[in-house]
Image 1 (cartoon, rainbow, N blue to C red):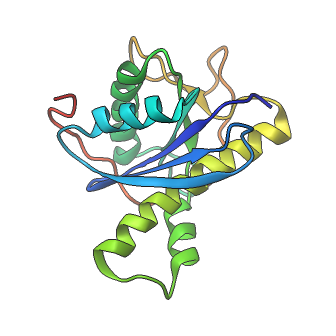
Image 2: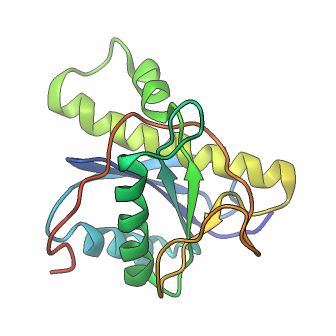
Length: 181
């Protein structure tokens, strides 16, 4: 198992959940919810720098059958822009099927409204990251697929990339204009 803090990111249309691991890569904990829009990539970069992150793990939404739809296309675009922003820190895409459902189930009967939605995003990021950490611990290999900061994210099955892990949310990832500003 590689050591160092990793960030987990769950991008949605309105909010982006962020989580971090401990330096040993055993446990994921929530960090914050970033408002989607101008400055979102900058804020995630600030968090990565402040935490000393050695890797960023981003949830890739897939259908239950494993197919990628419009939400996955948006996420791949966001991942490529994030990879350029946080380089040389690597960004990996991991299957996030059912993470929002899992997060909502974990928080059932707790907070209501906007505060609950913000916490759900953070918990979904925790679930994404924890599944990635657990998969790496079990297989000895980094999970998911590496995103190329110079271009578009790689496709599963290309050399140097491993399979997917985990579960996925039904949230989509919207385009963000001017997030670097």
